[in-house]
Amino acid sequence: MRVERFAFDLPPELIAQEPSPERELARLLVVAESELSHARIKDLADHVPRGSLVVVNDTKVIRARILGVKEGSGGKAEVFLVRKDPASGGEDEAPSSLRETPRERWRAMARASKPLRAGARIVSGPLLVEIEGKAPDGLFLVRLSSRDDALTIDDALQTAARVPLPPYIKRDVQPADEQRYQTVFARTPGAVAAPTAGLHLTQPLLHRLEGNGCEIASCTLHVGLGTFQPVTAEDLDDHVMHAEYFEVPRTLAAAIARARERGAPVVAIGTTVVRALESAADPSRDGHVRPCAEETRILIQPGYRFRVVDRLLTNFHLPKSTLLALVSAFAGTDRVLAAYRAAVRERYRFFSYGDAMLLARADAEAAS
Image (tube, rainbow, N blue to C red):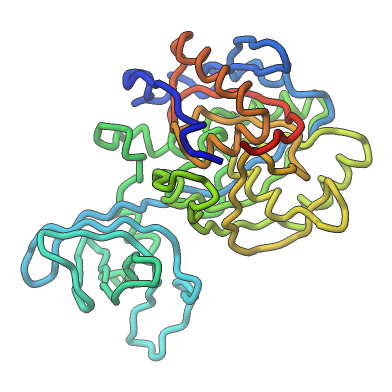
């Protein structure tokens, strides 16, 4: 489908620079088949069918932005961690001798006052970043280690690195971002961007959903930097999707099976949950998933037949983006773009710290 189909006019002042004063006070645009209604996130339990299975993404945003200096020259350098390299065993990888420091291998973006070459070492407080070279995808291969024997790599990252706010938030990181750019159910470190629909939920809201007979379950999808990368191809069929690691545990597969047995909808909290569940769809049992832990490059656009997810809570996405294409495939392009135009008129707040919309799945429309 042509990328231009997902264009819309967005006044820059509607791009949220701060979160709402409280998570549940964000606005909620409820998109029904023939009408729109306006609510708040605190009202979500009133709009989710009783007995639904609500699936959240439990990924945890790591401190991924590292500002430091090149060892030797003292030149400024910046490293943005993208994802742990599949070949890395992580900090639990045993050193070959007791005197060696544990290291983690990552893929990252990096820049400095002069071009970075293999062998360059970047120091940021207790953290050391060693440049190994370039990966086939154009990212740098880097090794992280702690310069302080008393600190683990995670401790050193916590000290040296910063919260990776999206590039369209034009301000410095504030102390409040430590908490607000993280979901209340985050527990599996690995994301370099937040699963933003989940930022609105609170434990009391989850309890209210459970009070309505809903079951809460979780998957993991580590959101990568590709979520912010623009689509440069004119047609989505020519776009190369970024890879993201995800895990669908057996407990979630069983929860989805129970929901199917009782005829209850599966409600995804965010497009990351959609990507995980649809990637794990069981080809032999429609509506079910298979437990798995792997990478996905799934590209969902109009014409896609959804097999698992029935309802979706999602923030408002970038124009001409793969995420807007996913939402359009889910609820219908014309309906979604009409909802976006209404959101602009009503001054909803857009993107990561913005407001949200709740949609029901429509029949897949023909690609055009």
